[in-house]
Length: 608
Ligand code: AMP
Image 1 (cartoon, protein in one colour):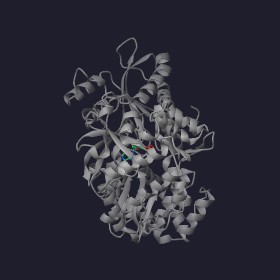
Image 2: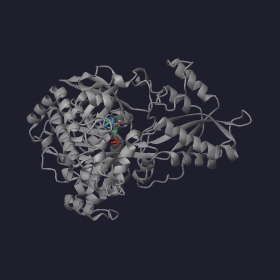
Image 3: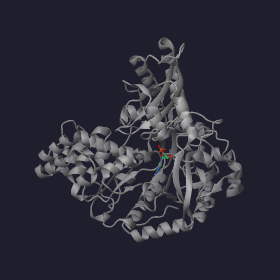
Image 4: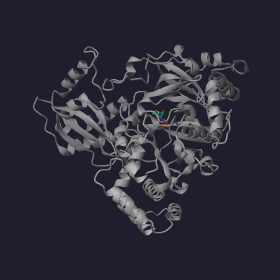
């Protein structure tokens, strides 16, 4: 089921893609057959299917329910606690992948198997011929990819729980990857695998700068991480250049594996290179800095779809016209699809699902709620009844122009699982549909890998209000909304609050300390991934509350109605994007306050 081919052979790779996409229907049938043949005896499936005769597609669809994470959480928790994997999977579950989607404030845990690493390796290998088809000469240099690992823990039963990319970079599949001239990186593995993200970043940038004349592409997984690296470079270029000049490495890099690997790349002092880099970085404007520092780079490889689209203007500023390339769409649950037209405009990116990665089904969703009027209130979709299970369709039967939520059955023990992503069908490549990523169901705010829902936000705001506004200030929070401010790096959450004295209509008296406590309380109440980004990854800045004058939310309503919202059904948007709504709010700010401390975060506790 997992084809193999030589990634140096572009033609063979493209031929394989043709085969996979042309035979999407048959491959999907085989995938489901294989999954059911292996797993119909698992405790989970036995409860719905009764044995041999029921392995066919139709009875699977009739009997196995479409589920959310909370439905399967008890099964996964039992495996984390040490029960046998065959509760959900015949192949042993070798680790749990911690998703950036959370349940009750903690990451969702996705089962994974040893074999799944083969499938991911295959998936990555399919990206190579696609890039080669559009960009020549990628075998003549290196890629500067800034890749990072995140904290991991062991479950009570000794299983590892960690993010999917940490799992992959630490695997033999990545570390012992066969030599392939299209995948030579400037970052030594030791710098990618360094636990300390600051040391990792410094060393990877140093290696990327030293080898700048060989770099043909630059990138990171997500746009947010890449921009963090640009900011880090801005803050540290003098130190980096000093290291290049002297051929040494700054003393605060204490990880010996990192030091050794970087020193072997530095190869002694290089005054000329240091001067060149320093003079580029010392320029007043950093417009086009990527092109100036890495003159042979042909593109920037970062995901800029979904919530990452907010970073496109900033990336364009730094990249100096280099194409922004989103190559793939994947998750902890499963890797889904690749972009077969990688040099297209970011707004035109579609992903073609590879039919051998999992069994895919699609729940039609209401087109209206996913129109791109982003200032309108999002649907509260955890229990979205507009989703009709009996209308679920297979991969090859989706309709162009329609919106769907993706549902997956994996080789690793997920059956008809709702991932939570809303996709729009943009066309077909052979028989395989292509999808634009529309949005994550019910996410209002996201800066990095955090995904804050309307409900998370409401709970956090409510706690702050209860604990700090009633006493002693006696203020009423009459309305609120939010905004992901990415105008500086790292970005941060902004809450717009309309506050009113409890007993009169005077402008509120705002006390700095009280308001700062509100900011911190909101942060304390946000979920695990938000707090990890804030506390550990430093990929989100301090939360800000901007208090707006009384009546501002009435004006916001007038604006939304003028843009087409219905007066009767008007609900305050809990999140605004840039544009008119933001201008209205920002022009009426009477006080702005920031959280003064970092929220607490500890590596995952796996209790249920
Ligand atoms: P995680 O489970 O933490 O690995 O996050 C996976 C989620 O990230 C997906 O379900 C999507 O919501 C989002 N995601 C992954 N790849 C893309 C992409 N190419 N474009 C937009 N969103 C993406």
